[in-house]
Image (cartoon, rainbow, N blue to C red; front, side, top):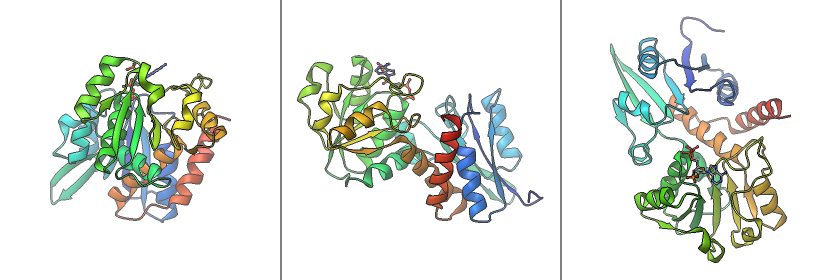
Length: 277
Ligand code: ATR
């Protein structure tokens, strides 16, 4: 029942209609019987949107593409890892009397670390990241937080070297990729995402060099990368797991409650099946 005490949460992004987060968060809020809603919002102007969230009494929000970097200019405080990553995907509004304070967090790295940690301990392990965009930054800095050694490969060498330098890790040129062995490989690019589901970010013959293969792409759920990896005996971790766990971390930041993981998982799977039958 929506009433005068309903807490407001939502996601700002553009586009946003495809987002699975409203389904996941509303299911979690309802499961715990919390008087709260989570709505998708597509702002015409980020500064206006941020003032709106603050002024309308939102308790928290997710931030997605293309606002994750620009939102940082508006915040009262930013979590140290989010600052290193250079992107915020979660806003937490706190009220003390008339004062409202907004802190920015990044839960993408928490999601990727938790997804991978279900399969291997991260400390001291070596992980090859494919990609050098925003997702690579979140996953990469997250791995470093967890004490893993990161190697980075990217189609555009200059961009790859730049991020590798920033993360203090080694860049692997394409010609050397076949020589690399690591405990895990993570695709942080959009390669393999529908409608280009037949593409792979790395030659399948190399996959036996990585006991664990994780993809951040979740549509399709079983990307060609993960299918090729599974066929070669690798453990696989799909992108929906990371999406779920970044949402779980948001849920806990906002509500102080443990996330209802089974409900969030089932809801995400159902919402994904609806969009990509
Ligand atoms: P995001 O913020 O989602 O990570 P991005 O900043 O556009 O998105 O980064 C996309 C990443 O995917 C980049 O590393 C990009 O490689 P380039 O630096 O060479 O552009 C990688 N990527 C995208 N499409 C690719 C493709 N078809 N093959 C290889 N890499 C690709």
